[in-house]
Amino acid sequence: MYTQGLNTHETQGTSPVDTEREARFQARIDADEKIEPNDWMPAAYRRTLVRQISQHAHSEIVGMLPEGNWITRAPTLRRKAALLAKVQDEGGHGLYLYAAAETLDVTREELVEQLLTGKAKYSSIFNYPTLTWADIGAIGWLVDGAAIMNQIPLCRCSFGPYARAMIRICKEESFHQRQGYEIISTLARGTPEQKAMAQDALDRWWWPSLMMFGPSDKESQHSDTSMRWKIKRFSNDDLRQKFIDATVPQGHALGLVFPDAQLKWNEETKNFDFGPIDWEEFRQVVSGNGPCSRDRMRTRRKAHAEGAWVREAALAHAARRRSREAAAKLAAE
Ligand code: FAQ
Image 1 (tube, rainbow, N blue to C red):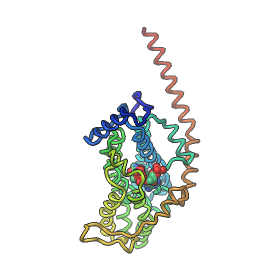
Image 2: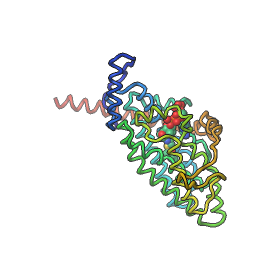
Image 3: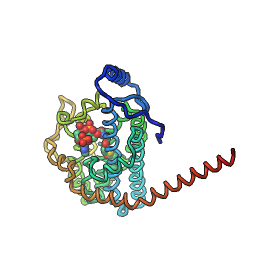
Image 4: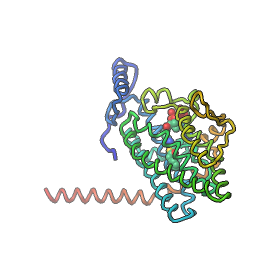
């Protein structure tokens, strides 16, 4: 998608030239201009983007696994078709995002290697199991709902390729969220057993969904710089609160109960107050000790190894095509 030659490897120190370049760069950001791959950028801006975009890409790819688990067991043909399309969309999102990261002078092979060796992070949420069909509804409703809340502002991110990739991704996430809410609504309005399944899924996915927004603002290491550079437009806590305020009425409309005794509308702040998040659980999951962390990595490594022949065949095909084109060009001269 983005294959132009890049002006990279800028060295940075504290010379007056660097200071002036940085000031000009910040002025462009402040004026809401987009930064493009060939523009000068501080090394730390580049690093931050590679970190965030690649973690995001990895999340989409690993995020295919919990739902992929239910493709063969979807209750109807219609549900199966929608789930297949959704999981394929997540794969596509991962690919756009790797392509956006590649404009920053890093290769896809390096990024994938970081994922497979456990060096790179991906979203904590994908380390939880999908135990029942209702979990597929909960993922669409809550996980995609949280993803949209976080990702709509990324459509206005200062880095052009990331912002543009996010526009299509958000449109698709919005369909994902609606299909998830529709599954949950169907179950919540169904038999008592179905309603209990929907409630159980909400009980298990609610808190992990809130953790998706990242640590609290006072613990977030990167927020200040990312907000100054307009990579992030809202803080982790602000987005978490917006998500809670939008989602709680949707659950109440279905007669579902959120697993938080302290969840309560605050007339003064016009927000829902909520109970404490278990940050120790978050730390454990992010450190690779989530309920499915090892299984997710094992599955990704296996899929990568089994796909080696596809990558080799694609490269061989591209090389043959290049040499055919070169021969045809020579013959025409
Ligand atoms: N899980 O200083 P901050 C999806 C890490 S896509 C794991 O606040 P930042 C679609 C963070 O990386 C879901 N790690 O960091 C889908 C950093 O570690 P580092 C993914 C987390 O970057 C739906 C450290 O903690 N979405 O769901 C998490 O400013 C359904 C300190 O944190 C994105 O990636 C976490 N939850 O803010 C697919 C969106 N939170 O790098 C399939 C783009 C934080 O220093 C099915 N990313 N960490 O080692 C972002 O908006 C940001 O990166 C945040 C974190 C908000 C996630």
